[in-house]
Amino acid sequence: MIVSFDAELWIWDARRTETWVFVNLPAEVAEDIRDLDSGPRRGFGSVRVRVTIGGSTWRTSIFPSSADNTYVLPVKRAVRDKEGLDVGDTAAVTLELVDF
Image (cartoon, rainbow, N blue to C red; front, side, top):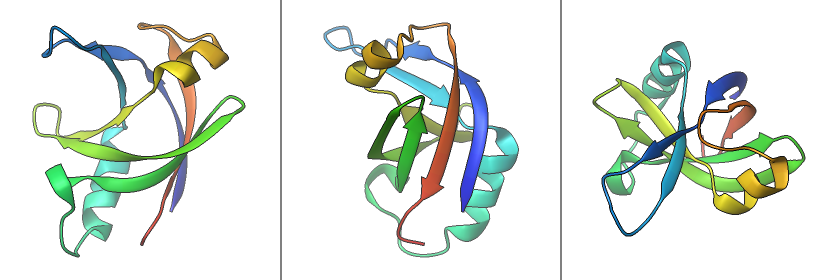
């Protein structure tokens, strides 16, 4: 499964010593992933993915967010710096599920 979408970067400030930046997956994409994900759950319910934003491609995991009923995708600082993105910006994301 490969999907493309635009999403706004937001900061998770639950930890005061670290800065984590995420995007939310669209609700319909999250629903499709939940429908596909019938196997054993990984740590924190994560799903492995390959992500492309601009010229940057990397492997990571998405994590379920019960507060938003979706999955969240962490966007590392190196990618944000390379692509000139900051919190509040909108990123064009291509996401591919791996291990399905």
